[in-house]
Image (cartoon, rainbow, N blue to C red; front, side, top):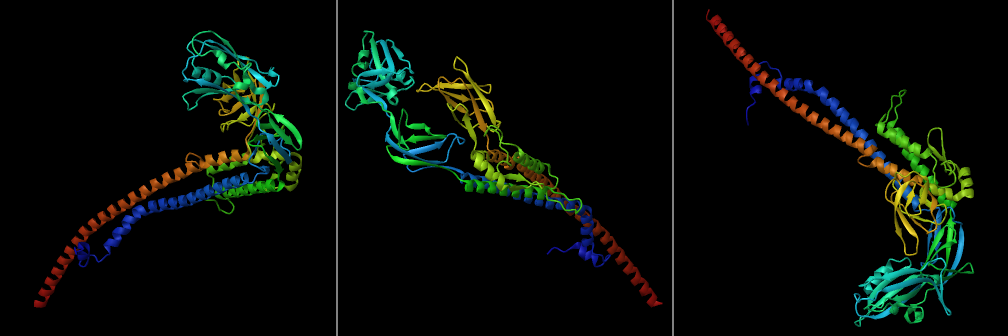
Length: 542
């Protein structure tokens, strides 16, 4: 073991505990700064703990929203999978049970033209006219609502080319099929419904290739028809109805029903006051817990001296303000006038906390139960009732009314933003918003609808979810605060390490100086002892 020089010298030197003295002096230079940094780190740990608790509370509030979404106040139930209902307008839905018997499904007309050698077999030039209407025992009756379409076949047109041209027509689908016996067939399908059947009239140009008369069905429809067009036949509460489509849009107000088989069943629609009340109370509970935690974390009481771990924090105060502003603002797009939280039985007390107001809840549920959709369901509908709206708008779209306008050339705008257009086989047009806050929305409109008002309501739950997601993201209010505290803690830790290293250097310097001093004292003591002994020896000889 290496000898401790300072301890060895100290036995014959000053007799002081110089090692402890060096450590004390070195600590005196750095301890105040280290203690201050470590206190700040402890405070930051409390702040991070508070932010962690807030993040957990916001997650719990989000879970409440999910629970409420799984407990809908409006339920639409079917007794059989063959009747598939979908709510299209929650305002129009009327509670009750509707009995539906599907006696026949709507079917398209199917035509087959056989005996072709190849999809690339050439056809004669000429004109093929497509008429839409209904076939009966006495012949074909053209539809006054759908004009005939003329197809001009140029030289070099093949069977595949004809199929491609037919597929571009609204209400027609064509396909070439390999029969497996060395020949090919051209299959043509119409839309469903008796009035959607097809008649083909050919004017042959007389050139080489298969004559267009092979496709003429004016007198040979029965020869080529594999399946006749047919309407859906249903009985609704005992009343017989026919529809051209297997999607019933006008049988139950606000509900669309897809028919998937011949069946007897029922659609039950119910608005549950109990489920709606439970959802409202669940929302109030989650909001109150969140508001209380924000208040505890940010409060500062000058009278008592008590304060939260994040007292005065601007990020959390901003979050609390945004949450209270969301609670207080009316919800537009659900009714002729905005719906308020007070309408829905959510009252705000003087303390800023929320409470359930049973009379207000009961009154609104009895008069306008659909207003509660504003809490948990987005609403997007055309006020004309004739356009189909789909898609999820961007978060920047403000609730309210949007104006749809279509010009004579077919171009359209939604609140001034251009829309891309596509023509559907049934003659309707589908428009997609590709820019602006409404991007992502699509509209399917009939040919004669040139203007409409689209009403959009963004639910309280979705607005709250957007606020929560933003708050807990890495770049959100909480995420930024956590990043800031972590950065400060990292800097403080590095500073503490630097000060501790500095203290070790200072202590070493003191020890070096003390060693030199102790060595000098030891030498002086040795000289003193020598002189004392010499004097004592002289004295004894006298």
